[in-house]
Image (cartoon, rainbow, N blue to C red; front, top):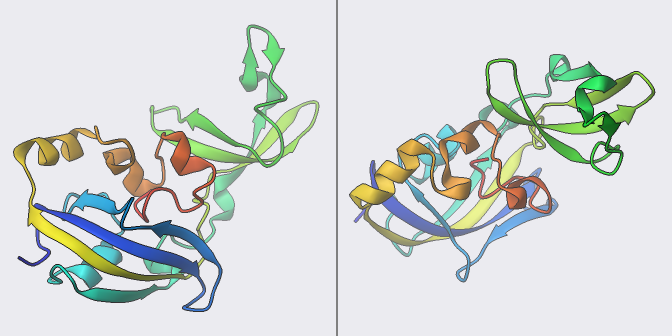
Length: 192
């Protein structure tokens, strides 16, 4: 069976920045593989294009330039917000809203997103809403562990955004799962 639409894919990979010898930033191992429904729109489109047609036991190496991964750094995604927006019960939580922390936010139209706190002063909080890997070239090296037909439940869960890091919110970098936002820079297998 080959990787194609509505197949459940299980794979391992090492993800590095800037090529095969670059910094290792994420791994999916045989004990904790990346599993997803192919073609559901939750993975990077160019990543999916490269693995389409592979079968169980095949290895892959994928080099994605930044524009095909998480895009270039957008200076318009770095914004200053009034400090009062971060008050909870009249108090500012300086343990959560501090330089270097990623804070979950919501846009005016209800879209969840994560912002990296760049600066905090008496009046404003400066935040960066670019994906953590924006501007980075990515290199994936891995193996296809399994390809099988996805169940109706797996397909429905993906469409409804119900699989943690395999949720529909992940495809654009807005995964709300804490493991996606902290230790795991790229966030749950190149889809977040």
